[in-house]
Length: 434
Image (cartoon, rainbow, N blue to C red; front, side, top):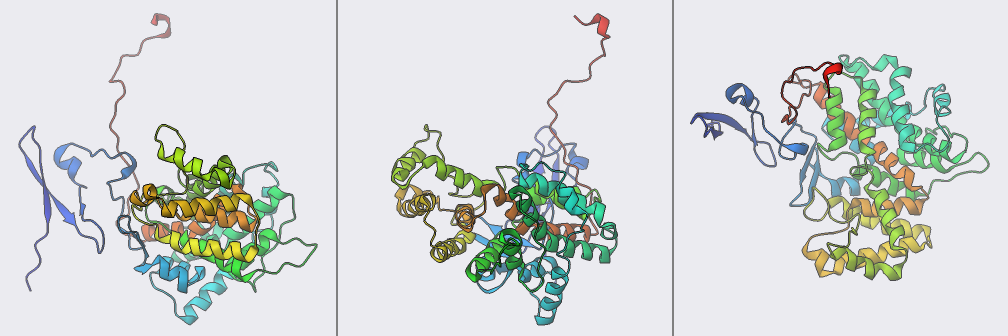
């Protein structure tokens, strides 16, 4: 059978009349990509793409998003199916290894994660170096980065076994680190992990239990927490994932790379969206003022925005939001929480799903809208919302890092620029400057 002819794209330089052909690379899904790696050598030109919104920075087999159709796939599996039929540990295995585990593989994986949940005891003193009112994300950045100072035996990125141990440690210890950040802020004693509990159940216990009384994990909240972790596990080449990859491309150790991801996620334009939802609800104030808020949102000159509606990537319904919506109503029903802010949120959801203005523009409630409501109902302060996001996203970051490190074609990241500054100028001595 004759080999299929490779597709190319021709660039014509109108200043010289020269033509240059560049390969058109097909993926298994999504748009084709123009391979411009030889562009500068051929033409002397760079491309200009602020935000890299039209540039593929890597090839990856982990996560695929079709924003127009509202599709999110992890290793080919729809996020809705994973959230409904799987659990977070299984999704972690899938993202890291590329396939769903069999019973033995899952059992071994859960065992390894479970038996890495303890933190080095000296790290407790590291926490005490922070001010009591430090933001939990500031604590997370510091503690995750400090792991490289405590776990020297898993920082050699060229050793496959050390990479594997680092992966287990990061996934296992992030709930412990996050729970300790919460406890430190609350002035409560740290709670050690309990190996008999699930990943989500263990995190809830470490966060909300106190030594003075027994804590029983509510199975509905445990399932909700597990789903939140699944729905935030990975999201392709977003800002924090790209940060992890760029950091890792220099050969930095995995703990430093994940700390860089945590720092990027902390930005309000990235990981702070569910916190912004709660702040917006507080600004609206009461259920009776929802209609007025919706009117203001429709007025471009008002300066008021409804947070948690629509999505930069999804131009249709966020596929994670449908799962989160159902989970949100289950949690509120289970807890029976009487909170005016939550009543306000449910009224806002009702209007947004029925109002022609929102429906026509596909401004549906997104995953951040519902996750913020769930986390508030569970008792998490808003300062912890992004911490939980970082906890869940760690597996995505480390999967992307692993894929990059194991790629024989990996190169250190080195974006170029369009320079707009001063040209070469002669130096003028201080005595001669007017």
